[in-house]
Each structure stands twice: as structure tokens, then as C-alpha cells.
Amino acid sequence: MKCNEIRELLPDLAAGLSAAPPGTGDHLNSCATCAETLADFQKTMAMLDEWQMPEPSPYFDTRLRARLREEAARRQKSWLLWVRRPALTAATAVLLMASGVGVFLMQHGGDPGTQHAAISPGTAVSDLQSLDRNHDLFADPDPDSASSLLDDLQIQETNP
Figure: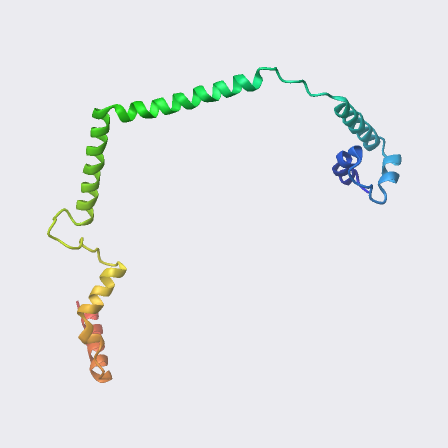
């Protein structure tokens, strides 16, 4: 085994969480660096097993609940103060209505009597509209007239 493979296994080996794969013992016997690192891990694990968590203060829970109540009251109070300010509330309502009217007018081209905004050429909608306008041209069942029309169009393109 290589040192890199052993280093990945060292925390688990020191904690006794997994069985050592074959060849691990041979490598630890031959490599002093890996053996020393494993010993350091084992010492650290032993110290962590002996460590005792300190007890919290007897009034910790009481102080924590009081602080949480104060914070909740402060947040609720700040929200209620904003709502209670009628001038700010009215200004916000007017601003929202004005922006809504502005968006409406932008979508309808600024003229309330128009149903649709101008469609720029090259979009899918304008392509469909041009197909609709030229329906008779494209729906002609006579292949000779369509081919002669295409020939006429090619002649017009070459002679500007």
C-alpha cells in the first residue's frame, strides 16, 4: 500500500471504526511517518474521549427565551410602524399603480385604442402574419403557376 492510501484510512483506524485492509499493518511497520501519524491520531482520539463538555449556566435557557422574545417583538414592531405610516403607504400604492399603468401602455404601444403592439419584422409572429397575407399565393394547387411565379421572383432579384 502507498502512504496516500494509508493517510485516508488513518482517522478511521485510530477511532477503531473500520477494519484494516490487507497490507496496512505491513506498511505501518515499514513506514515510520505513517506509524507516527497513526499514533498521533490515537492520542487525539483518547483526549477527545476524556473531554467533558462544560455545563451551561443555570439561567441560559431563560435568557435565551427572553432574547428571542425581544427580537420577535422588535421585528413585529418595525413592520407595524411601516404600515402605520399612512403617507408612506399611500405613496407606495400610487407608485405601484403608476408603474402598472406604464407597463400596460408600453405593451400596447402607448395608444389605449390599439389592440396589439407593432411587431418587428423577422419575428415568428411577423412571419406568420406574412404567410397569412400571402395565403392565396402559397395555397395555389397549380404547380406550373407557382414555378412561373418563382421564376419571376428570381428574375426580379437578379435585375434590381
